[in-house]
Image 1 (tube, rainbow, N blue to C red):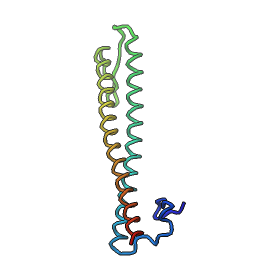
Image 2 (image 1 turned 135 degrees about the horizontal axis):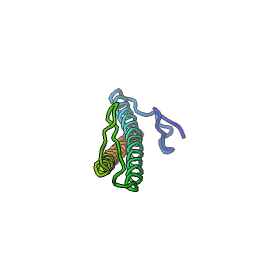
Image 3 (image 1 turned 30 degrees about the vertical axis):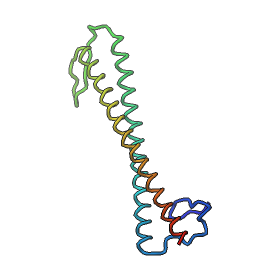
Image 4 (image 1 turned 120 degrees about the vertical axis):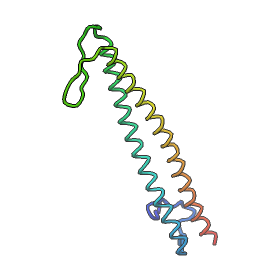
Length: 137
């Protein structure tokens, strides 16, 4: 399949001389830039979701291990370059909070990603419409 500015050109418009006017070319270039930018943001959201999922899983596994310990076990929380003695309950609550925050951020990123994917689809549809309109001329 032939490509134009990195986009696949559908077979029904392959012979087209594309957008000939300066305004049409500018609009096409702007739409293409928007699509590329939005696709980058989607990839970034995917990476952030993956990282937060790992953080959430790590906190869950750590909490599981902490809860198996005896209540009198001495536990230390790392703070900068030092460690502070904390109770099992405090450590447990911190790990639960870490999991909750990660889950909230994941949900926010998934909503943002969904919006960005719709935006990419709209821009691609606009590009197709522009090419089809030019072919009709």
